[in-house]
Image (cartoon, rainbow, N blue to C red; front, side, top):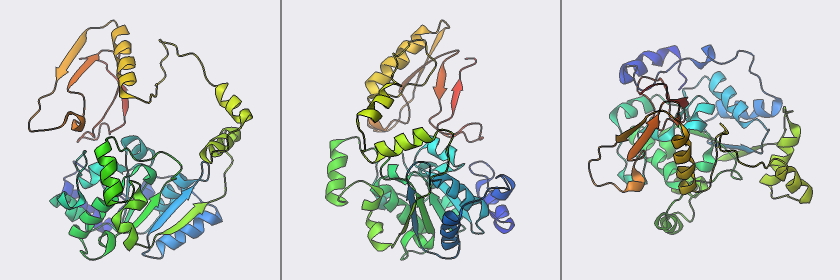
Length: 331
């Protein structure tokens, strides 16, 4: 969150310096950060109104650049959130679940209780920036609306907070793991995307699509991405992609992405077995009636010195965040 000098003392008192530190981002961001006329015009519209905005655009148009410019230069109190830890890291923000203290599993918006500390903080927020909104499910937008109304103005969309969303609907969709959830969203929302939220009908979002593509280190790759984005794939493009396909090497240090959890678990198990150091096994203590799919981490965790790991939860002491990568040095 970005703060001016008047509210920083309030926020420090609320959170005791443990959960979130409110600083002036002008002290952290590069002073020479600038935008082109297209983005400058959008920034002015956001800054000089209370309207809600959806900013989209294909790869290379600078959505993240505009977001960083907004949080650095806005005179309003700005909070930046994203649906995943990795996405939040990219924009120096927090995950939605962490900031709003939302349970990690599916929950109806009306059932979410507002945390008292979060409520006090939300009363000082003027702008909520939500990045990678294509990955946010419909009920999450309604939960945000519900919590902001509880904390602020109960009859105004998002409690009177200005919502600015960044993302590309052509990119990753939300995760809807079960058939039951799919049926729920189909019946209650007409779909699971962010624009299927009930509050969407109550809010007139101004939509802007960034058009100008900035020169990248690899313009050919940006062109390839955007053609795939639009389904414009011919034999030549397919050949370009296939030239990058290489045989998987078991001793390769690269991170492997897979389409199934079973394949991921198989690869991770083999990688761990190949490390010659002693294996340590940690078993979780579980209380309450929870579905195994709702566990925040594996029930049984096996580690070795030298194993690569990814953090799944934020550290209260700010040593790491959800999505941070590391290597086990000692156990």
